[in-house]
Image (cartoon, rainbow over all chains, first blue to last red; front, side, top):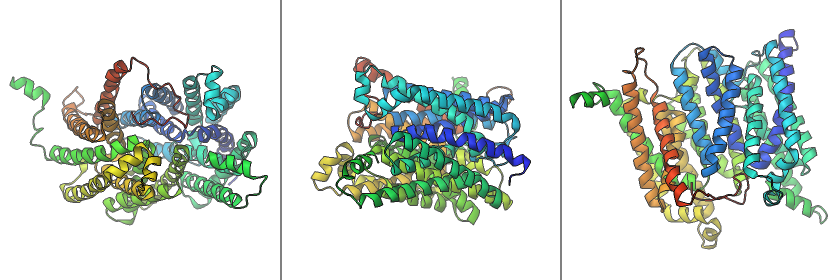
Length: 279
Length: 306
């Protein structure tokens, strides 16, 4: 499975997983599971539209995921954020359905855009994907402090003059960028599994943010590599293994956390209480 | 006058059998979605409601593979998914959304597997798009009775636990203090949601399932004061949007030279989306343009109003 044509897939996976792990850490911290699902899914509609117009699907993905992020942010201004996410999502999907109805041509591409495709990565895609990945990680590095503050202690952040609304939109844009670059291997529907499962597992193992982010990256890498290897061996879709392994790591993380809780010692109690509060 | 009539209702609209089936199925889906949707929006379970649509779709593709009835697959896996979500979810919104996301991810993975196995066995093409987007015009009248009965059961469940559910939704601590069996009530709500979403996903596709669940309910909650009135308003909005969407889709075949038309789901969602946006303006004026300034990401602020 390490033949020439597979090296692209391994390379992309190794770029994708850390980004998913790092952005995913904040997705889990901020409880943004729904946007993390909605933005990639809506972005898929953009990819369909881009295909229709003959533009690169990556461009369509990026454009629609940004539209989605901004739409969710804008709608969330006046109403509940989960309602905003749901409505923005269905509007984008409806547009996607409208685009798709115009032509019946590219069904295999739909499948691979949605569920991921082990063999579908070309060398020309590597550079843009890597570039977007660097941008994402740089954005997280720049936004780290305000992001952590608004996520964990929102009142203190307000007092410091950090506008929660603005950070939310910035964060959604980062998620959008991460989406656009991770779809080639993992597919639009399952990228969010990588952004939820490994970070959730990592946070069950430790409450320290730096360590949790590192663990999140490690678990994400292991998940994607194992999924690619399994997909190559059994010919089943990569997405299936990602979804299952993400659920497995989440389950193991929670199991570990509750096992630790049954072994409370006086010195461990405060830290465990804090960790329990977080779940 | 006659010209105006035919301009609005293109020829053959009222006599078309697919239109009639779509109107009935869509209408039933809209009503059931409105009832469960109002509670879904109030409980902040929009993600769960949407996720169950995808979980049901996985059940649908599994049923397709096994040669079973799609209805069984949609509703069956939906119920299983709702049960698992309820079991592993915790009370706090974040933990619950995380659990929802994990179950959803696993279900989508299953969907991928089922669809792949279906295509390998050489069965239907166009399955991914079908399962994802659905088509309101391809329902047969044979499925209507089962849909209506199951819908009735879902609505009956909600009505049966109306007061305790409402209390638990508005103030969970008060409900627990009053001796309401909150776990049981919550589970019943999830099961009714699963059946409702499973049915609507089958009947009108995954997109419309979520749109009909959340959109009219959220709009109604902005415009009304009580849960009962919200349900009534959501029913009206949902059915209205559905029928208007069907009309527009039917008419769209006559627009332009290409005679292609656009899908029904697009029009229905557009109407729902537009009505939600429009409903934002009256409430904007009423509160003087200032809504709750709390960040949507902060866990402490879970307001009921949409």
